Length: 388
Image 1: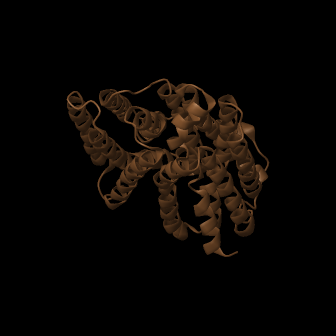
Image 2: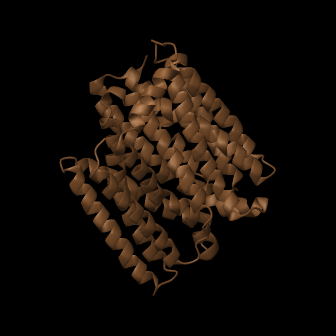
Image 3: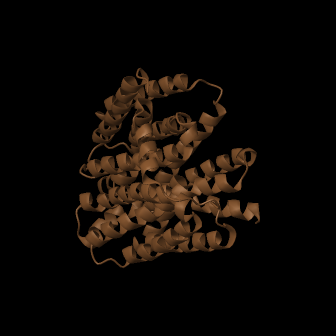
């Protein structure tokens, strides 16, 4: 086994979830017009994708120890390819939503296997570099996907994004088939009683629940622009899908920069970073809310506010995710699967709620961000004083 090629295959699989969400966000208004559907129904295609990812992570993350990882990944990629083609050929938005739910299950399945496969293959010392590379690869998804999707929408159509996702799945399938062997060689009988006992132990921890809840709510600061901003930028401010893609690239870079700063400041206590980040988030949103009354449709004010929010999310999000794993070092697999799946469920519920909103002014957009930040701060206050 050539570990360098195996690593390339795993790194290519890492951003499949983020690409599955962000690639087609520039096309949301155009899909709504094409199918003559409401904006709410179109946005629900993201919510159902998230719900599918939750199911994929929980179900396949649980049974992988009994069935092995390679077969699950290959079948998931094959089905992801088929159903993304089906989306491009869908006769109605209802079918798009159904097929998106299925592709969400596939993406969640691959995501749940990804880091487990890396842990199986590489030593603890090698995993320090591998983990860093996977974090970078994961971060590139939200950065590049909407930019590529904006160009595909501008020069072809919304269908091109799903054909791209199908082709990407085919490439991943070829790489995994050629370079990633079955990594879990010691398969054992699935014990549902033990699985549920571990889930109960993990979910009974107040700090764990607080961390995953905060992770899910925080991640919405990244998703709002794709879900709601696509309509606001293109239909209210009348910019093109390509411009929306460039703006999304700018926002993705903000988040990526935040994760880098988080690593550079790893010597700083997490509580200090969190307190400073929350303070800046609250102050900046209040300031920009006041400014929005005078500049009701200012794109520059909106972008600065979102840039700050996404940059600070890049600092905060890894803190909460690492916290969920550190609380249960003896149950890293269970805790990791439960954390990832729970975050997907929270995001699915919040995107469903967000899909009901139609933003018409800068003030409404800033209020949405401010309310979300306040919710995260309240959760932090309620959970930081309680022990597991």
